[in-house]
Image (cartoon, rainbow, N blue to C red; front, side, top):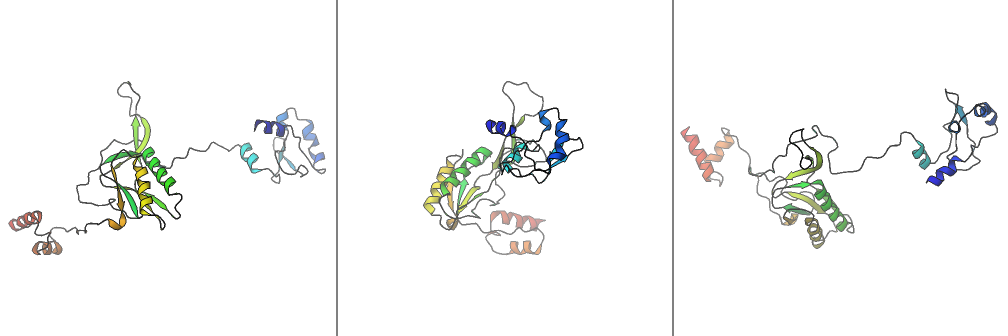
Length: 272
């Protein structure tokens, strides 16, 4: 690349016969090589170029100049180094740092995120854990490489690392604020689906092997879930005390009404 630019810098500008007299005075009083215009085009050497004088009096290339895209991108002053690509981190956050927090424990009876919804097979973790962006990306890459030969296969990631984790250097004094952001992670509760795969041509043994390889990248026990074999519990409607539906539920002989908890509620309502 360096030899190419040296060769281009020694290439004289090629002007048409009509343009030579107009720029002769300007080139005559030029005092430094930087004031000359070079031809960086890889096209035909006989292509005529036109010049236009700037406000400073020096000639500049007109818009009709043919320049290769590679040289134009290198010679452009607005060319900047591209930002390093990292898909598993939020693009914008309201607060740069957050508290450490705790892993959620599902005690309210909610089953959200515990069953396969989009694909045909899933990977479910058996205990609460905090997964880092590197671990999620490594498992996703392993699944993608295993399924790249299967036509029409798809991957769904059900978790996303949006929590910044900070760190400070060892043997540092206390205080001086919170440490800088080291990586991003996510807190995943117990029995949550983190990956799903599917496809019309995806066989169960192939999917199970892909999930097995992905489990080696995760620091937690997991299990393989098949959508056709999972059984969801029936949804119990939420009833507000005092309404007609709530009174009907208490008076009925449904399993919910005959449970110990419902009996206590019923006695409390009668006493009140």
